[in-house]
Length: 372
Image (cartoon, rainbow, N blue to C red; front, side, top):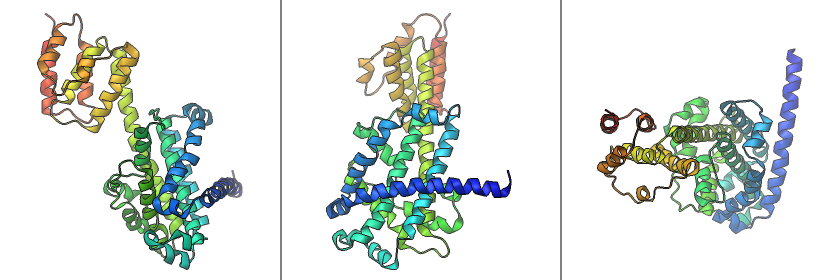
């Protein structure tokens, strides 16, 4: 392929992408027109955006839908392509929005939190199309990534919805800046990215309007700080979407890893009920429960119930597990217990290398599993 041909292909791709972005911006302009000033100031726009732009999307997009589009491609590769595509769309939208931002709008929105939307409709509309576009894009991207890694999300469940929101917008103390992911962006943009994510803790009781206010306040930075020679809305949209996508990939890929482990433990086990007790004994051995350990136990209980029809009401009500109860159950079993030992080793390693207390429990378990 000649350079001229390559350029022609690239231009055609850019034109198609721009057409998609412009169509979605037009759709969102209609959405913004339907908002009241109070919707914007209170953050209620976010609740309406989810109702309008996420639920209908999730009804259409599932694992089979994405697999049809990327037949035979491993999940990791598809996720990478979805992140790059979303970042490309975000940059294009940023360029279109940047052209509409004037010095007057920047001055008005610099103090957006205290401004009255009713008195500055043009400024608010320009800003809101940009914010709504990126918000919806990043939510859908995080959802796509969860679907591709086969992480179950029921968006009619408030807990699952909150989980998606938290992952999509990295709501947890600005961890993107702390995790060093910012090194992946150009030096000139790093201070802005760090400022964008700084203080990102959201103290809200899963309140969608509060999330809406939080997102408005965070996005003002894109037009409130000039960067010499760099269209700020373009680079901020692109790199915040890249970082949000990479964060979603890390979270959901890790959860997929834990689910895969739970599936392996349940499928291989000849002693499903005992496996639950041993797993919980190992997890609580050091008197600390890591997030991955909680996640593993939740999925393991679900899979043992679904695959083996085992529901252990006694374990469900345990507060402090008694090792003697586990050893009693162990002694009651006959035959080979190698599956139990293997499970203990895998459970101990789910959040990293086993520590001394976990190793001590596994050592005693090994001794007790020996059959003379």
